[in-house]
Length: 297
Picture 1 (cartoon, helix red, strand yellow):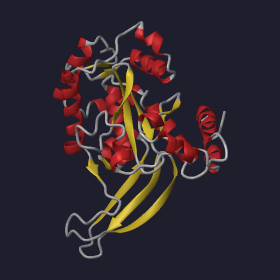
Picture 2: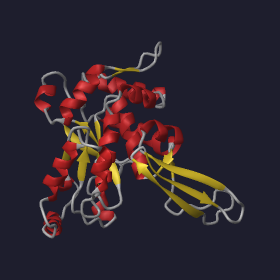
Picture 3: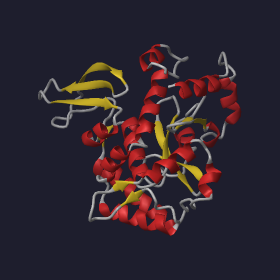
Picture 4: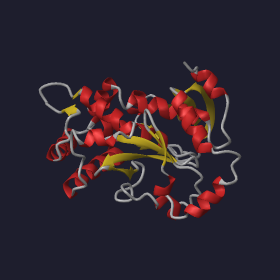
């Protein structure tokens, strides 16, 4: 058994840090925890859940969550078995047992409502240089580094003018993020992915190792880009948006699930030759190193 502390003491070549890999392994493991999925499922508005449930039933895939109002939402063990099969990319076994979610307009409308609610009504975005809510002046930052994936650090902000203060803990535990209801792209991605998994939409985490992460959900038999931090429709199935509009210069874009790490860079770039050129400057085949390390965590 590998020790997480020992694993985290050594680093890959920047910006590929082992702490990222440990964090994503731990977060995606929570996507398979029935207690956590039930916890976040109860936060989703009933109407949105019902609308999505109807669409899932139409495609014969509604096996993971029971939305019976007479009892608490219950995460079925079959949901976790299904997730594990997809994690291992053993897709054929799943196809024989159930059809995949279809990319119907009705389903996309329901998904759109979920994304709008999450972005506008549920989560609060924390800027990297936030201003005071009371007087609008720039806040001073005191950063306390964390030493575990459960809490990566704490950002304490204070206003020298009106003495307002607030703290922003960088949690890795999904329940804590759900209770706190604020964050940047990582917190939004971790929690939104858990909510999607809780309503039987298989979801994983994607990181560009530049400055952003988002989700992919398994719809229509393929992994689709979905980013809860962006406004709809850019937030869904617009994988090259970042390269076109944020001038991203990728080396690796990696997708993380509980049991698997996948290089998905080709889905997010239209400049593959430039990506290959940047990769050629690395000292070794980093992808093999990444995959080997991820399996050992």
